Image (cartoon, rainbow, N blue to C red; front, top):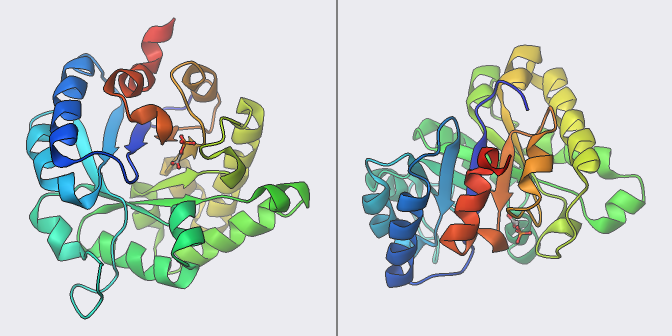
Amino acid sequence: MSSRTPVIAGNWKMHKTISESEAYMRELVALIAAATEVEIVVCPPYTSLVQVKQIATGTPVRVAAQNMHFEPSGAFTGEISQPMLQEIGIDDVVLGHSERREYYAENDDDLAKKVVAALAAGIRPILCVGESEDEREGGKTGDKLSEQLRGGLAGVNADQLAGMVIAYEPIWAIGTGKTATPQTAQETIAFIRTALADMFGQDAADAVRILYGGSVKPDNIGELMAEADIDGALVGGACLAADSFAGIVNFRQKG
Ligand code: PGA
């Protein structure tokens, strides 16, 4: 693990009503009270953002949206914009999750605009990248990641990159129980950091936090966090119960 402050983010996806979200947050806040030197991020569905932010205020927990449109307003049925998130104090936004790319045809051009819009609003982007199983087996992982980074970060400068979070999520590891080995995750994240150094310079690449995502659980977070370039995790399934997510946040207490 490096000197970069780790980020542990829980992506709730399409789970939890408002009342379920409130109960979860009350439990989580108590369980992570002793956590220090780790940034904790929860990503509830839109309907719960207001209530979750209210409970998170005054605690170390940051609140993220799971997506955002790049325009501030307009005729975009079903979309949510940056001023809407800003007004309720949202800290971060997950952009380009592989489920958004796969099911809702999000592309790198749209993502580049979303990243710029989020940065302009002071909302920190958590930009997701990752290869499919076929791409990994076909030796195309590097090309795919480089393309997603160049595309999604097209409008960003080095200072902005340094403050962002990138999440490396191999599609074959998401929700499958098939975690990348710590070695594979480390090698791929080191590749991403080198690609970012080529694009933005070494200082920005050394500063940006790069997370691993894909079947992270309380019992594998320790070995992932032991790797030099892995700065945290974006957690799906294992974040849905507060005690399980807290077990990941509190990875240092595992001995
Ligand atoms: P998972 O999801 O932890 O359930 O594999 C990760 C993600 O999609 O962010």
